[in-house]
Amino acid sequence: MLFDLRPKTSRKELFNREEELKTLDKVVDRGDPLILVLGIRRVGKTSLLKSFLEKWHGIYIDMRGVLRESDLYRRISDGLANNIGKMKSIVKGIRGIKILGVEVEIKWKGKDSISLIGLLEELNRRSERVVIVFDEAQLIQPPISMKIKSAIAYAYDSLENITVILSGSEIGLLRKFVGIENPESPLYGRYAFELLVERFPKDLSLKFLQQGFKELNISVSREAIEEAVELFDGIVGWLVFYGKSYADGIKDINKIFNMATQLAINELGKLSRREKLVLKAIAEGAKSWSSIRKYVEEREGVTIPKSSLSRIIRKLEKLSIIENYRFLDPIYREAAKRIRN
Ligand code: ADP
Ligand code: MG
Image (spheres, rainbow, N blue to C red):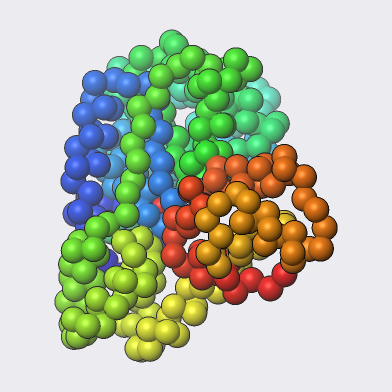
C-alpha cells in the first residue's frame, strides 16, 4: 500500500526508484566497498535501502538512538532477525551468534563473544557479497563512532566481500562523520560512491497520489491532488502523510498542512533559540548573509559576531535544512515561520 507511513521493504511496493535500484545493484555487484546514500528527511532513503536489500544478503542497522555498544549489538541482532530467511545460512555457525527461531542472539562480551570486526570477518569468509547498511549514520556519537569507523575502514581495506552503505538525512553531518577529507578519520583518503536520493518531479508526485488513492478506491479531484503537490512538493513522505490523512477522513488540506507543519516544528525543537531565529529570518525572506544578520540583530537587540552567525548558517546547511539561503523542504519553511521565539 503506497499510503503506509512505514518505510517500504520490497521492490514491488516501491514507487519509481528503478534508476536508483539499478545504480545500487551495479555498484554493489562490482564490489565497491563504501557507498553513501544521501537525501533529506522523508525523501525515501530507508524505503529504497530496505527494498534494495531484498535482492542481497545484508543487514539493515538503524542507528537512531544508538548510544552505547549494547544498543549497537541489539540493532545488529534486529537487523539479522528481520532478514533471517536469507541470512540464516550465512550466519549459521558463527561464534557468538545464536539463531533461536526468528530471534538472533549476539554475545558481544566475555567468553565466545564476537566483536563488530569479528562479525564482518566471518561474513567476509562466506564468499558471497554481504551488504551492511547503517541508516542515519551521522547520528553515531563517541565513544562508539570510532569503533564503527575503524571497522568500516578495516572492511574497506581487507574484506573484499563486504560492502558498507552509510545513509543519512543530515547530509553535511554524514560526510563529516565519514571524514574522507579529514586526516584524523580512519576513513581518510578512501573513495565512496555517492547516491543522492531526490524528490519526485511534479508529474510523478501527481501520479503517486493518484495511484495511492486508486489503491484505496477513493476518488479525489484532480484539483485537490494538484494543490497537494504544490504544497508538499515531491517529498514522498509528505505525500504519504497527505494521502493517509485524507483516506482517514481529514479532507481539509489546510488541516493536513497544519498537522505536517506541527511535526516539523517538533523536529526543529532540538535547535537553539538563535538557530531558530536564523531559520525564521530565511523563512520570512532574508536571502543573504547580511539581511539575516540585520533580522537577528533587530530581534535580539544585540550585535552578533560574524563568525557566530556563519557557524549557525553552516550548521543549518550541514543538517540539510537550508542550502543557499533556501529551505529544502517547504514544510520546514512554514514551521520556521511559525516558531515562537
Ligand atoms: P527517509 O528514510 O528518507 O526519511 P522513508 O523511506 O522513511 O524516508 O519514507 C518516508 C515515507 O514515504 C514512508 O511512508 C514510506 O513508506 C514512503 N516512501 C518512501 N519512498 C517511497 C517510494 N519509492 N514508494 C512509495 N512510498 C515511499
Ligand atoms: Mg529513513
